Length: 518
Image 1 (cartoon, rainbow, N blue to C red):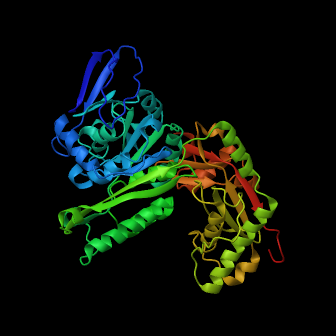
Image 2: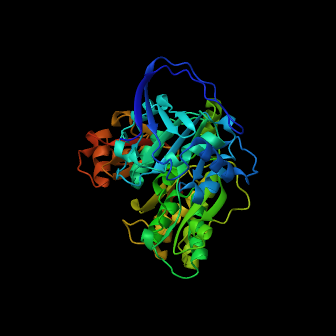
Image 3: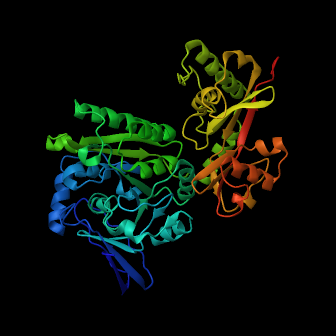
C-alpha cells in the first residue's frame, strides 16, 4: 500500500511552528518502530509542495475573523478538494481553541471499500502531508482496537480522502503536532450503530475533538440523484437545511429517516450518525457555513453541498458532578411523574380530537429540572393486563417531557406489532413510563442483572431490547430472558451464547393508577 514507510527511529524531534500555529510539547518516547502513512492526496486534492499548500490554506483562511471557542467537543467538516469546500472547512478549525484540544479523532466515510458494521484505523504511528508529520495517538488506537467492530483494512485507507483531506487543515489551523486518529467508517445499521457508539464513546475525554467528515447533498447525473430539475439551487438548499436541522436537534431517528425518505446523497451519513449517537446530552450544534459547488462554479447541473458546524459540550464530567446528576435523575419527583403520565394520556386524547397522530411538542408553561432531564424513555400501553403497544428511545437525546409525549403517540398508533389504538379503547388502557439511564456496554451476558438491567442484544445486524421489568414480570431467569431476546431479534434461540454484544441500562418506572375497566 502506498504511503506506509516503516523505519527504526528515536522519536525525539520537536516540530517547528509558524505564524498562527501551535506546537504541543513533545513527549519522550522509547525507541520504537515508526510507521509513516503518506497522504495520497497531495497534488490532486490540494497543492503538493509545502510552500504552495501553506499559501493555498492561507488564502482559505484570510476572511475568517471568528473568535476561537474553548468548549468544542466535535465538528462537522466537509471533505471536497480545497478549491470547493476548503473555505468552509478552514472556517470550522479556525473557530476552535487549539489549547483545549489534546487529540483529534477524524471520522470519515469509506468511499471505496464496503465494511458492514465496522470501522478501520490504519496501522501507522505518523501521518505525513506536505506540511510535515502528525503523530498518531497510538495509545488511543490500542484501546480502540480492543473493540470488536474496530478493524485494520489497508484498502480502506489506500485512496480514502474523507479523513486525509482534514490533516493539512489541522496542521495549519489548529496545531502542528496534535495527536490524530483517523477512523474510516463502514456502513452501520441502527442497532449496531448504537452499540458501537456507546463503546467508542468510552474512549473519549474532554480534550478529544471528534471531526465528522461529510459533504451533504450530491446532486446531478454524475451522482445519480435528480429529485428535481427546476429551481435547483433553492431546492438543494431546502433539502440540505431540512436534513441538517434534524442533525442539529440531535434527532438521530429523524435524521436517518429523512435520509431514507429523500434518498439524499449525504456521503458522511455514517460518521454523522455515529457522532449523534455519541454526543453528550448537553451538546449544542451550530452551523458555521454553507456552500455548494454549483454556486461556486455557476453550474447546478452537478452540485455538492458543504456544511461546517461546531458542537459544544463535554464528553465527560467530573465524577462528583456525574454522581450528583445521576442521583438527581433517579429522583424525579412524584409530582413530576404525575405530570408525565397526564401528558402522555393527553397526547393520545388530543390526537383523537384533532386527527393528527404526530407529536405536538408545545413546551409547557413551566418545566422543572426533572422534566428537562435529558433521558431515554419508553411508553408502554396495557389493555386489561395485556401489552397493547410499547415504543421508546434508548439513547438520551431529548428532554424527558418531549420523549414521553412523542413516544406515547408512537406506542398508541405506530407500534408495528399492533393495530392503531381506537378511541373506544382509550378508557381501557393504562400507561407505563420507563425513564432510562444511559446505555453502556458490558463484556458478557454474565454481567447482566435480572430485575436491575434493561438490555440490548446485537448480533449479525439484528437487535432487540427488553426493559428491566420484562424478565421479572415473566418470571424468567437470565438464560431464558436472553433466549426470548434473541428470538425477538429474529435470531436462533441460542444465538446469544456466542458473538453477541450487549448494552445495559436501568430505569425508573411509573404507572397510572388503574381505573375502572383497566
